[in-house]
Length: 290
Ligand code: GLU
Image (cartoon, rainbow, N blue to C red; front, side, top):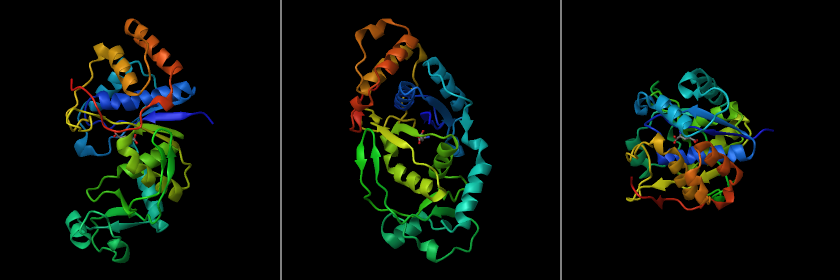
């Protein structure tokens, strides 16, 4: 089976250093295994999608020397597929409608943990979220973060939002299976999502990919480097320098000669010397703001 990895950005802003790390780590791991690397645009959360961001991310990836396999898939083109899966889960009684507001959940439980109320009290209204029934805990082995025990509270989680959007957990699980992704390298801010995705894989009879969660870059205030914290867009004129900076962050040891070579030579060196075991585990490494 050919190694198939992916980079799945949400087009909520331009490519920044945090997303470059996920792109680079997933790319190098795929290329070091002679595998395929796919790009998927996760543009389901329409209110957060920024006009022009998809094109700007794809352009930046090109400028940074990434080459992807096959066409770029956009989740907004796949709503009918998610709808079929949702219908399947509902018809097998693996999911149920829920119209509880956050406030109602808080009043009943004192927190945000969902208590399964609508499973035993089916709502009458049509304006509902859909939750996946999840009564099990899942453990998995992460190539970077190590064994992840089946702990924490499990709850029936949302796979279709009350505001009418398919939830990330459903779309990502369906797409990873449809694209035959067997290796997922992404930021460790998504570590908590992985058991939910494994749960859906099991409900839907999909194979489970191998996971590797890289540390998340933070700014000097300890906030995740992201579009929300206004991480600056990357300057494509500095592509090689940014790739070297990302390699250092990922625990690789770029040699000094890379400072004087072309971008493609730099990436070729990085593929050849890629060592996933050298990636630091810990989260929240502080970077200089730039
Ligand atoms: N679209 C998600 C993000 O940009 C990443 C999803 C994933 O890698 O599973 O944060």
